[in-house]
Image (cartoon, rainbow, N blue to C red):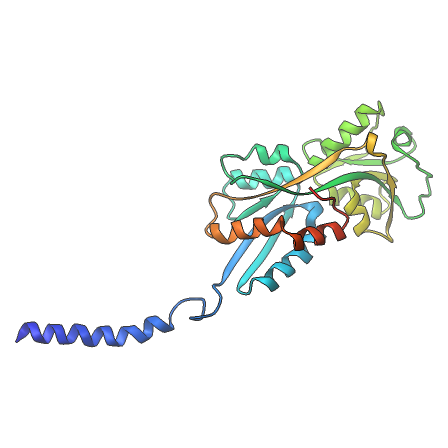
Length: 254
């Protein structure tokens, strides 16, 4: 008799718990699973990733993508310190290669080139890299630890142009800001950053033979709590819609 009572009680309890289980979960039953992704991304991707993130969220209901932008060297430091994030996009392959223990296999999603950012109207009449050696000019560069700073140093060295910058900034957006605010006459930035500031600065093109190519690799982070969703986002960044968004913003195809 006791066994029968226990069996009946167990069956009754299971019957009560079944509908509760059907109602549980964060995804609302049949609705899309809710995932919040955090992506660490190079500063030069600030504008284009706002568009890309919105497009991805529209295609993937339930997924929210939050970006944290900084210089690639700063992002690398955050990863090494264990910052909670799901994916990483840097402005150079060197920085990404130094994080092999922390990332999945990287994929280059876009390329970029440098230009000379000057005040609107180019009041100093700067025509090319050689003009940046003029001691009367206030030239600002990114620090050599930053990808754009390293690229800038390379192209200036190859042309044997000696520049004494008035400051060395922690990321490309800081360089651009100095020119925008009139605190510098010129600065080396990515083509896409100058384009995003059209109407505030002008861009002086640097010939391809004198220029450097910046490559942007994307990878998942091994400590991600949403590894499948992070991998899906990185894969999407290499797909046709993301490539069109990047190309429309002035990035080159990988």
